[in-house]
Length: 435
Image (cartoon, rainbow, N blue to C red; front, side, top):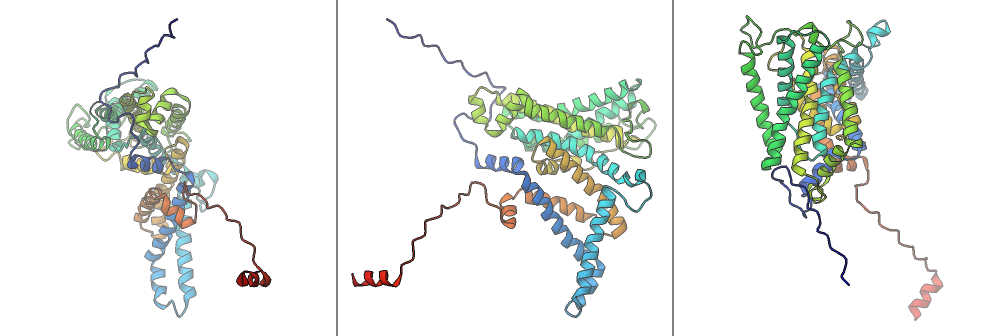
């Protein structure tokens, strides 16, 4: 009798270029720390915002002239300084709320909710760009090329919006698709270099940012590409009416359909990560690329795919800026720092679609309310930027946040309680001594 026939084990599919990982190795400590930062406990994000607001309160109080004047005689009348501190902090944050969500000082609900529409307008590109950064985070990549991807998306959408003559909504849809494709291609360059050569995506995306800045400057200074006809200024012509994103709530508000695009992007990213097989492979590569490769997942191909999709999501931010906010033409500053703010939004949202949505709205509120703080309370706008930076600092240091609030550190085991020995009475002690 012959034994059972042994079949050869099927080999794993060929990888897409050179895989920067090797099977059988554990992720480095830097990779594990990176995963903890971008996908940690959501409570840390909330506590980080609270700590940043507390630090902002201290800075607001120190920069207030009334607080500075009353500090000179604090020991004589401490109540004056405490009242000035409370007045400066409460006034600043009330102004922040009224400038970001609802203004109680105006008559009518329609006028009162105008600050909320401004918040959502500012949040629209932050949400879309944050999704692109967060999706790359989930696959273990650090996409800091949002600036370049936004610029290329805005350039493509702007070229379609100014040079083509199509009816609405075909013109608008063509400009949107052009912007998304351009952003995806620009990020895909970093993805394919990562997949084929193992080039670090941080360095590549930084270089692509610089290339995009100078490439856009050349296009804005060249007739027939992006520069407005008959003009010597580095600026495009106004977008055609058929390419502009329509307003959502009417002409009295600046909120446009780009916010709807951002919500669609949130739903798509959630479905991709939580319900699709491709998203499962993204998450597997992000958790442990070596184990994913052993399981038969092409790590290099996943790197390329995730950067391609991430760039398309960031491209939505460029499209919303181009076709919704700056419809009269744009220059080289169209990104307005959104590409880098998206990193903060993704970190605060813990790289989850719903978390990024909430973080984008929060940062939109900071931007809209910061102007109100400066106008009504003379609070320096830089304090809002410091608060945003402190949020990133605290998010990147979860042990510090846990220590401040007395939370248990993850993985810490509670020592078992040892049974207490019964106390001995005087007779027992005397018996032991005599023995």
